[in-house]
Length: 479
Image 1 (cartoon, rainbow, N blue to C red):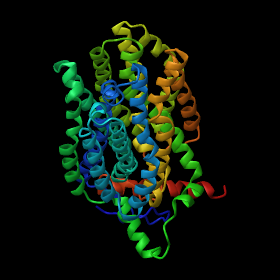
Image 2 (cartoon, rainbow, N blue to C red; image 1 turned 30 degrees about the vertical axis):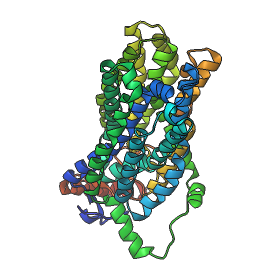
Image 3 (tube, one colour; image 1 turned 180 degrees about the vertical axis):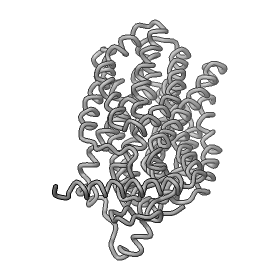
C-alpha cells in the first residue's frame, strides 16, 4: 500500500494518497472486532449470571442487595478503565496500535479466566468477593486500552468512503460476543439443575476465556501496523525526532473540546448499551417478575436482530452522514423511552418484546456509527490516547454504572420507570452533543492522508480535487 500526507498543492499525486489493501483491511477488522467479541462475551456471561453471582459471593444479603452488590462489582471495573486508557493510549500512540492491542488481549483473558477459579463465599468467606473484585479490576484495566485501540485500528485501516461500514463490524463483534455468552448461560440454565449451576456450572463460561484469548492473540500478532500510524512515524522520524510526545495533561488541556464531544457521545452510546445488555435481563426477572429463562431469551432475540441493523446503519452513514443517524437515535430515546418501558412493564410477552425491540433499534443508531465517529474527532499522533481516555472516562462515569444506578433508583423510589427517565437524560445530552459535531463521513481522518481502495480511485480523487481548485480560482477572479 502507498502512504503519504494530505497536500493542498495543485500537483497532488497518487503517492499523496493511501491505497488500502483489501485483504489487510479485512484481517484488521476481524482482529479488532475479535477483541470486542471476547470482552462482551464476558459481559454477556456476567450480566446473565448476575443473580447467581450475587448468591455465590454475597449469600447473606437480601435478593435485592445481592443484585446490587453483583452489579457494584461489575461497575467497579469501570473505575480503573480511565487509568488503563491513560496507560495504554499513550503507549499505542508511541509504539503502535497492534502491539498494545495484543497485550490488552492477554490481560482480558487472564482476568476473565481467574473469575472462574475463585472459591465461593461459603469456602473462603470475605476473601471470595475481594478476589472477584480484583479480577474485575484486571479486566477493567485491560479494557481501558481495548475499545479506543480497536476503533482507532479499524478507522485507520479503512477507506474514507467505507469507514462507517467497516467500523460497524466492531460493534457487530460486541453483539456477537454478548449473544454468545448469553446463549451459553441460557443453555446451561435450561439444562443444568439450579444446584449444579450454583456449585460449578457458573464457572464454565469464564474458563472459555483462555482458548478464546489465545486465538485472538494469535490473530492480532499476525497484523501489520495501520497505514496512518506508519505514515505518522515516518514523518516523526524525519521532522520531529527531537520533539517529546504530549503528556496526558497537555493533551487534556489542548484537546478539551473534542474530548468533551467524545464524552457526550459515549455517554449516549453506553447508557443505552448497558441498560439494554447489562441491566435489562435482571430488570425483567427481578423487577417485573418474568421467569428467568423468558427474560434471558427475550433479550437474546433482540440482540440477534440488532446485529444486522448495526451493519445497516454503518453502511448508511457512509452515504447520508454520521450526524443524522446519531441525532435520530438520540431524539428517539427522548420520545420513545417511556412508551418502550410501558410496553416492557405490561408483562405481556409480545409487548415486552416490542418495547425491547424499540430500545434495540435506537441503540443500533449508535453502535453502527460510533466506531467511525469517535476516532475522527482526533489527529493521528494522539488519536489512541485521546479516544481511550475520553471513551473510558465517560464509560466509567455514566456507562458501566448504569446497571448499578438504575437498580438503586428502582429500589429506592419503587418506580419501575426510572430506567426510562435515565435514558431520556442520556438522549438529551447526546442530542446537544451531536449539534456541535462536524460531519466526517467520506472524509480523511484528521492528520491522515486520503484513503481509497484502488489506484484508479486515487486518480479520480486527484482529478476531482483539481477541478474543485480550478472552480475556486475562477470564482475568485474579478468579473
